[in-house]
Length: 312
Length: 246
Image (cartoon, rainbow over all chains, first blue to last red; front, side, top):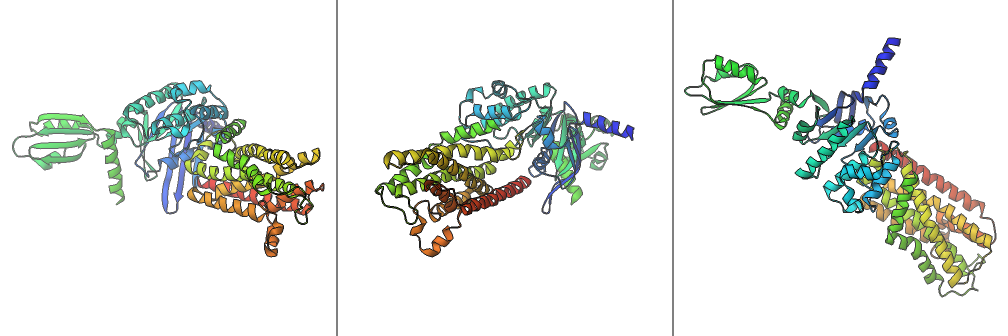
């Protein structure tokens, strides 16, 4: 028994967030369906999925805003509410409204005052890049500015975990890049960062680890590179002269899809090196050979389609 | 939580429309209603002159406005906008939001009482003993908590477009039927029978008893306590339901 206790304590110490068989339903819809996952200290994790995948519900469960129908959610080895009360979690909600008729500075000062491990409000605003709009009324902000204010509220103190639900909604490209630079500073200080997004390039560019959520279930969990591999993530294209032996091409190893139009062949492969090697083994002489990585966008579409095909 | 109360207060004091209706409007209404009245005619069965009687009615009305109008609509709006959810991601205790709203409303309701008293004393020569002024202020202020609880309950009951008309109906219904705008003795008998059981009637009766140099009637206090329990219980129940849903 002693040994088990020690193991459990060690797991708790190295686990930032733990979901164990968590299910949440709304009527007939399973928004989160048997979700099991673990976040470790210092990770920057993207929770990726289309609208309706269950991202927001999963984050609400993590933050104690909703209660799971079954399964357990733990944050730093305690319940979500305890983790928030002790200031270990800072969060920014997609649906998080802001108090109206007050200035940005007043609102940030309030968030700092409410944080058990508060930072000075001036520093928080400077880091979030909202010092210039400190005196502006909260209800007069643009969408991107409001997002930055929400980010300031989420980083008002020294939290160990920062949770961001679609943080760059309403921002243009340059604002988005500036925002991610700000967020990376948070991660570089050793914090664990979890953000939900459907901007796949963001997950690819920023996250150490990507969790793909689809219909409330965890579809994939790995680095962005692993996710791409899982979807058959290299595109190989080449031209052939003369008649094309399609069945032979179709039998190439690691091939996941093939498209032949005229003399041009386009292949998706889970292991482009092996596929190309075998291609030369067929004795054909491909011209204009190109091997390119799939963006996470396409990888994601492929994973989702595969999942839907399995279900129907 | 003090920081939230302070900010709620700063924001209420900045809202000119709200300040006008809760602080100045009751005093203006007092002047309109009691303006032509002399200081001799008594209101039926009370032994009080019209200005003295209406002073308590309007002070109660002002306090009612301050605690009911501001909160119900704000709470409904902030539930919808997600600010209430955002606050739940802070160390603020769950009840803190509602308590801060109530506390800030109570601070605004005090000037609305005092302004009516000042206008009544200066313009209509209402004269009372010092203890009566203090007791009146205390009783009307404390009694306004009943309606603060009602405001919170309405804020959690209704959403969006519905909250304003519902609040208005409750507000004017309670004000007029409870006899805050005109003595309920002018009502037909059946309406007087209804009015007697309204919290606003008991609320104004508290102050009128003090003006008559009496202790407030047990029935009025009991009625107010019962309504407070009802409204606060309803608010707590609706709050919990909202928390589970959000």
